[in-house]
Length: 367
Length: 75
Image (cartoon, rainbow over all chains, first blue to last red):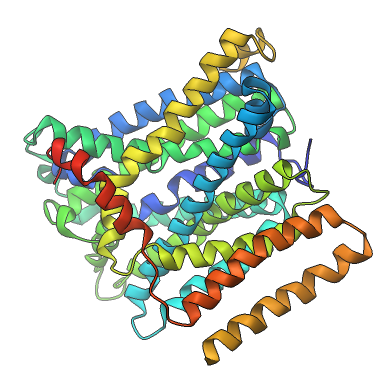
């Protein structure tokens, strides 16, 4: 059953996934807990991300043109399949609430006199319009944002060139292996593990046979970008990156070219606004679409505002002190997100192979 | 009290925006789903607007994970 009123091309899927993966990672430096070895954590985290993607592609390849909800129904039967789909949707709702709160907290730190509620309601309001407009609108928006963001980052790289000190990347492997593994896991979970949400959209892509290939391309591009981004930020900030709340933000603060190009960190705030919007809206869209599909609704649009209201309440109830956002992103999310990013999809793939559901030949072509 | 009034007004606006179309099209299933999600959201919003302190989610997860994090030597 197709509830989304629009479909997107594989190319649009690539842009959507790239903007999604860069989303919140441009502000929270990936792998920052590993200090000077952050780049290694990103590299290992990206490899783990490819393992996740291989599982998702295996599922999509075996059930071409079907989405997560339909796959769960096929593999586990109508009762257990639907129960599992509800669990996924609650997780997506929770993650979108978390993204909204992180987004609001970031801007509340920059604009201290404005109440937090303004930063919660305004993006949610715009996001609900985007969700109502459909996936194609989000995909087209991400195409524009992607080009702009890449241009801005190239500009930043050039301006930061004279501040780069590659000795900041040393010493190599001076941290305990457990710390490196935790940093790796946090990179794998955020952003790579969140790609699981794309499984809700797999029935809305023009050419299902291309889905796996374009998702891999997007993951490869984003991994290389995040790796360069981490190397740059660590090379500029050195050990300061581990104690800064927003390391990438602090790195841009040091730009000073002839007293003309200064205070460029606001560029990052704009980029975060543009990228975070795609990520938050996509989670929101997938939650609404999944719920409407499970409840066999004619259209998903009547659910956009009620689920948006629920999302707002959950984001208020998440935490009252900002430190819990950092604790969640660095210590808790890497563990509990594994259930949804790895264990449940892997279980579904194993059961699908055993029960021989879907198309058994299709997976080799797509995975 | 003003907060609660504002919340009720916002939810009334949402209803005015969505419900007439659903009734006109006789989409009863969609209407039921809409109500099933809007009602809990409304109740939660009223409780929050009234200033009632509810347990927070992330600190609760942190508490639940503390034994595992301690065992792994992370905290």
